[in-house]
Amino acid sequence: MSYVSQAARLRIKAAWLGTLVVVFAITILSLGRHSSAQSKNSEHISQPNSEPNSERNSEPAIRVPSNVAWTEETLTIVSSGDAFRGLLLARRCNHCHGEEGFSSVPTFPNLAGQDRLSFWKQMQDFRSGKRASPVMQGIAEGFPARASADLAAYYAMLPTASDPQDTRAFPQAMQDPSRASMAIHLIVFGDGQRGIPPCQSCHGPVSYVKGAPPLAAQNGDYLEQQLEHFSSGQRTNDINVRMRSIARQLTAEEKTAVSEYYGAGLGPGVNSR
Amino acid sequence: MKKIGKKIGFVAAMALVGLAILSTRYDMVDLPVWHFFGGGRGIDPASLHLQGEFVESNLGAAEGPAGSVTVRMIAQQFVFVPQCIVVPAAVPITFRITSADVVHTLSFLGTDYGLKAVPGAVTEATFTFAKAGEFKIPCHEFCGAGHYAMRGQLDVVPREQFASLLPGERRTCELR
Image (cartoon, rainbow over all chains, first blue to last red; front, side, top):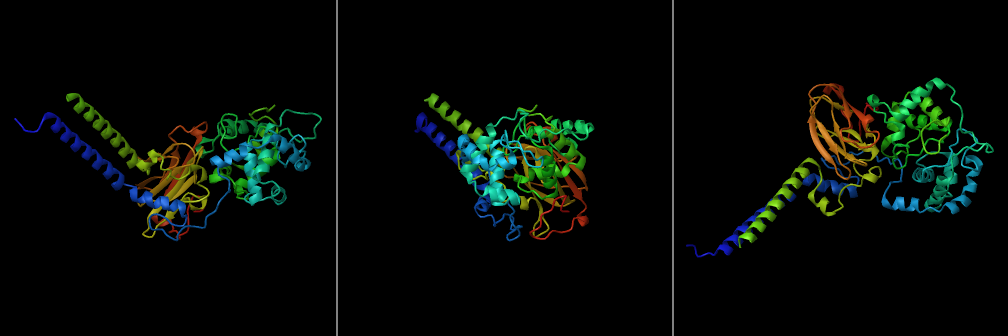
């Protein structure tokens, strides 16, 4: 008979097991494959100039497309806009963008029914010069973050239904209706072979991505101009090169087709005809 | 007495299973275990474009001092950025990829290689493409309405056609 009791033996066993688990845990935490890389990487976040893999001083100059990031704070600011204050502020926009948010010039964008986030982001980008526009930069400087949020709230609630008494340019008939099938194919299916996602998967109504404006009530000439600017690199304020990558893949005819189709009020979307 | 022993054994077994799961995950993704406990040390998927490794000017193929090639990519709904990358053949290529929104998985069609892009974490893997060729990079993890059209491209060119890069230079198909 052993002089150690049954309970004591169990306790010893448990202690051994516990030690094993702790040793195992410490090993995983400290000797993991990427533990050293990760610790360098987290330094890297705070200091953008340091780099893992001993590539110090070899980073290109940082190019920031837009100062806007969809963090919690940003979303709070944008969603707290006051539509009534926006209504008062919108007098400064009426001359070009129309009293009902529909422009009478087809190369100016319609603002009625615009998504709050995309509207706010464009205003911030105009202010910071990330989206180059000699006209809008000066105007946007008068709208700090809070005022832009108010405007965004106002335009988001403007209806996009047609009004015969308004002097709006929208909608304009397609110049070449035979391009409609090309347009609807890109809007609904995209082109997987070339890596072009369908327009409606980000711009609605199928699903929305933060910062992507709805297109169903937008002027065709404006859309075509912007697609052209994205593909030529004249407009670079899309976060993570999203629209630039897509616009580069589109042919000139496809850009025209999609723009005209949306501009004719045929595109799928909320409140489109 | 016997009951206590069983309980201890059960807890220890569960702990081991948990650690085993954590360790496999840890091995695949550059995601330290402390992320699970709210460490908050990962990269912020919403502000990749503002600072850090995945700013747009740092994406694409970069060449290290010893001729090593590192490719940095972002996967997002519904495009890979850069959409087309170019790398030399028969050279180990280190991919570093993260996601700006949801989980994406990419594979290089025609090879055995694939990668998972996780928001908030960096996945790193090193592959060697033996032969030159063009490989499509489809997304394999359902990521939303445009998932099926999410596709990038990898151009593998012979080593001598891949002109060496300057330290601060980044290469994609457009900037070949």
